Every structure is written in C-alpha cells, then in structure tokens.
Image 1: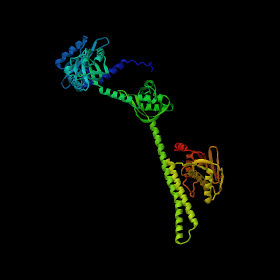
Image 2: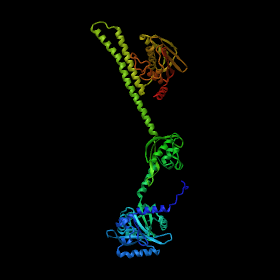
Image 3: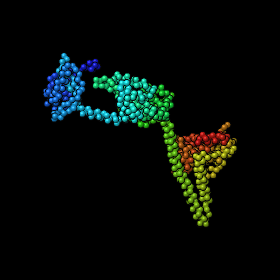
Image 4: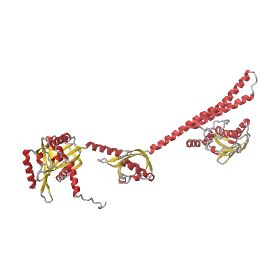
Length: 620
C-alpha cells in the first residue's frame, strides 16, 4: 500500500458522489430548494410520494406541492431558517400531482455556503399515515411478543408493561405500571439496577445481559436482557426500553448437558480451530491421564502420537469446512505413553453468527472392543479349522474303513461259496480275514483315541513294568506278518512307571510307519536309559521325509508320503505325540531323504499322576 497503510481522505468529489448515492437510494422523501424556494433536488422517493418525475419538478417552485392556503407556511419556514432558528418535525399538508392532499411530517434543515449564508433548504418528508401504520404495527408486535417488553423512566418507574411481561412475571399491567422495576429484582441483585440505569443515562445500550429476576409468586426466572435508552424529540435520554427473554429452559438444558458431559464414560473435549483445548471432562482425565488444569490451554496434539500428527491437520481442515467426522477409529497416546484405541466423533462449534469457531470431540476407548473382535476372529478361525478337520477326518475315515470292509466282504463271499460247493475253506482266507478285522479294530481304536484326546478324557493307567520286555513282545508280534526284519538293540534293564498299553501303542505306531515306508529293508529298534529317562529309537532305511513335511507329520490327518496305496488315517504320529507328551516326554525325528528316518522317544522313568495332570493342564 503506497500510503503506508493509512486510508486516503475522501476528496470533495468523492463526498459529493457518496451523498448523491445516499439521497438517491433513501426511502425518505428528500426535496431541496434554493433561497428563493426553487426546487434543486427531487429524489426517487419524492417522485413516488408526489407523482411528479424529477425532470418536471426540478426548477419549479416548492409551491408546486404546497396548497394555496399554506403558502405562508413556506415563507415562515424560510424566514425562521434564515434567522438561524431550529425547525423540528412538524405536521402539515401537501398535495400530489393528482391534487390528493397528503398529511406529512416535515423536518427542515438550512443549506449554507462556506461563509455561513443561507443558500437553500433541505426537507425530509414522510407521510403521517405511514408513520401511524408503523406505530400500529409496532404496538401489535409488542402486544403479541412472548418476550417481556417493558419501558421505564430514568429513576426506574415502569411506564409500559406488555402481555409477555404479565405472563412472565405474574403482575398485570395495572399492577406494574407506576411501580419501580425493582419489584422483579431479587434483593441480592438490586445493585444491578443501579449499574443498568447508570449505563442508560450515558446513552449506552446493554445487550444479552444474562441474570435472574423474580416473579410475583417469588419463583426465580433466568432471563437475558437487552436494554436501550429512549429519547425525547430533542434527543435527550428520558428512559429505557427493556426486552427480557426467559432462558430458564436453556439454562436447564445447559445444566443437564454439563451433568451429562461430567458423568460420561466417553472423553468429551472441545478445542479451538488451532487445536487448543478449551474443555476437558472427567472421562478425558481418566482416559488420557491429564487433569483438566493440565490439558486446558494446551494443544490437542499432546495426545496424538508423532506418527499420526497429520491426522490432526486433516481433521482441522474438515472442521473449517463445516464437515463432521463420524466414528473415526485411530490411536491416541496417554500421559504415561501407552497407546489407546479410540473411536472419534468430531463436530464443528459455531458462534451466534454461524461462524465455525472450534470443535467438540467425543473419544470412546475401543481397546476392549478391538480385543474382543480379535478373539472372536481367532475363535472363528479355530472353528473353521475344526470344521475343516472334521470334514477331512470324515472323508479319510470313510475311505480307510471302506477298503478293509470291501476285502472282508469279498472274503466272506469266497468262504460262503466254498461252503456251498462242500469244499474245504482255504486257511489263507481266514488268516486274511483275521488281519483285516484287526486292521479295522485298530482304526476304530485310533478314532477313539483322537476323540478322547480332543475332549480331555485321555487318561493314563500307570504301572511299573520293564520296557525292554514290551519292545521284545512288539517285535515278536510284527515278525509273524512283517516282510521287514526287525533288529533289536535293547538294554534289558529299563524299568519305569508308564501306561503299558499306551507305550505299546507308541512303539507299535513307530514300527508300523518304519515298515510301511522302509522299502522292506531291516528296521532297527534301540532302547537305552539314563539316570532319569528311557530312550527308544526306531530307525528305518526307507524313503525318508522331505524337509517341507517335517513340520506337519505330527499333525492330525497328515502323512509323510501322500499315496493312494498308503494305509492309515494319518493320525498315528499325532496320537503318538499326544501319548508321549501326556507322560511328560518328547518325540523327535531325524531324517534324510532317500536314506531313511529315525524317530526318538524320550520318556521320564517315573511318571506320576500329579505330573500327568500338570502336563494335561499345560497342553490343553
């Protein structure tokens, strides 16, 4: 700015242009004449009132609109103004272009030159009918207003009292007019009236002054006062007009809102548009750890983690545009640094003029909700996994049980045919039938074992026995049917306390697997002991196990080699692992693809009921 920031004074030309614009746009009739009464200015409002267009009125005598019987009135007006007298508003009659007489109110002012000489007269005219209509309208508004509208003198004496005041304070107009306004002011607030009257005497207006007044029956009323001075024709303050609005409902609503905010479990915070905290409720104190005195006046960014500061910029931009932010899930930081999952709802705050001046924020802690959602998702995943396992189990069980049953059915037909032909039954048919029945029985046992383990009813019946003797019995059992030779390298003195049937099942499962995948090569079973443990190793020289299969071979329904001719449910190693764990032991495998596998079982020599219960609790 070239003038150093100061505004450039208006030139006389500018002032003249501004004045002309005001006159042209004024709704008041403005007519100016020179000292001889010749019309020099005739604004649009004058055209409307009198009917003469400006081009017809300009240059004519003011008597154009003055009735003949009032010509002398114009002469007196000019004489008074030339003598420097003040001419206040006066009522008279003028006529319009059609000859219709108009009752008008005229205010006249002298027009003087630089030397102070009278050079003309400016007249502002208003039709009295319009004034009366406006007065009647004002009276109707006052009478119908729900607000109390009261006027009083400068010493506080009531001079008018509308129906709204009667309804609000309980006094009739007859009871109130002539009384002091102090009749509705509580004793402890009488000093307010002294202050108000002092402001009015100085011509000052009081707007939206919130206080309490007292009704005739003694009950208190929360009100908002707007008070303006009234003046006489000379412009001297002679009293006051007062509008009182009952805000009891609003005050109660504010009290209720304050109670809700104070008692809410959600953090309720307000802030300015630069992010400065302006209110902080009790829940915010509990949630974030800062007291109200510590938070108010600080930036809201103190609870926003460093990596999320850009969120606040985005939120403030939305608020400045008047947009609401609903249920925005994010993370905030407490005073001690721990993070809180929150859901934010943020709304703009507007002032009386509708301008956005800040924001109200409600923060709800959803940490538990997110935790529950995670647990629910995990439970659903587990359920899906269980259902998938069930379906897989049913499919495998149906397949595995169908094969031996088909063989049994065929054998039964062959034996039935032999009986019908009166021929001797081939002993091998009976042996094969026996083996198939044993296999079906084994499958059913495994199914029962799986069910018991999963339901937590898998019990151990502990007894003291010699593990070496048990291994020998198992080897003899396999030597009858097995096509693979079993080599034993067993310490004969391995005594311990275990469930004999379950340990038999473990070693049988491992030997069965070794035979199945051992390519008919010799199987070696080793057994030894330490001071605390018994160690059993089953080694084959078969196909081995691929690295990618090692993690899953001890799971349900899993096999190291997936082949259509592989027998079993894929539960043997899983059941083996559960039995060993139930004894407090462990099972591991060492393998090399194409060279074979060695499964090693380590069992504590003494398994106690207490240890079994502890293991079961820890492994459920």
